[in-house]
Length: 335
Image 1 (tube, rainbow, N blue to C red):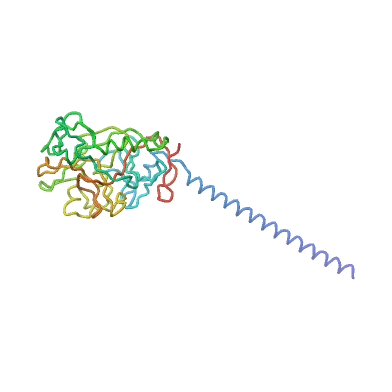
Image 2: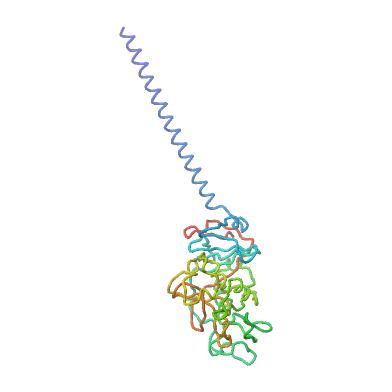
């Protein structure tokens, strides 16, 4: 009897050991699986975070409402970022920039996310000589970005003449500023055509459109490394249906085009690349250039005083990117 009871207790003890061993083994397997899954998730997220995309793949992120990348309704095979908070942040020169557009040639047009300095578009008497007949008030500077071969005309043909020298801001951007860039950034820049024609304020004749503004910009081009944003870039970035032209944006200082990522501060004025023209007689305004205003966030008008410089340029079409374009995870150009 005693031996029988001992065998019973021994079997129970063995059973407990087996059960405890199985529980321990199950815990170990469960923990290992959880850790394995965690590693998979981390790896998957890391792969997504660091996945490289090319420019054609970037085009697949097109939206039709809200903030984001849109097909440009005015220029075929071009894509533009619109709204106040699109995911268009990109690192360039170890600094934060914003993507303006994917051009038809797959280059990326970008703009620095802050002002680099304050300066006049063109210094007083910088282009004062008898051969420079367009800018009739050289003591105030001249509103044309660069010298022109032939004759520079306003869209309404009210004024025309020769422009024989570059502006002060063009010389700064492609001299001192360009030379300050790190070597890897210089390699990423694509020398490109910039539309530098005049944009007319049709406050008298009316009937202005963004397409007319684009046509004025495209009357003259300059090819180089670094320029400025266009008037049409600012207008197109708005998602307000009332933002229909440069004229409409400036009339009575309306705040109809300020719902875009271009407006970095309510205290900043910064230059655009296009000369200013007026349908009430342009000759007196040849020193003027369009700029983004601080008083209401809309883009437009021109003066010959100091304003901010936000460089714009084009990145080569063969670059690849990582990131997702957000402020916390901007696009990173892969070497």
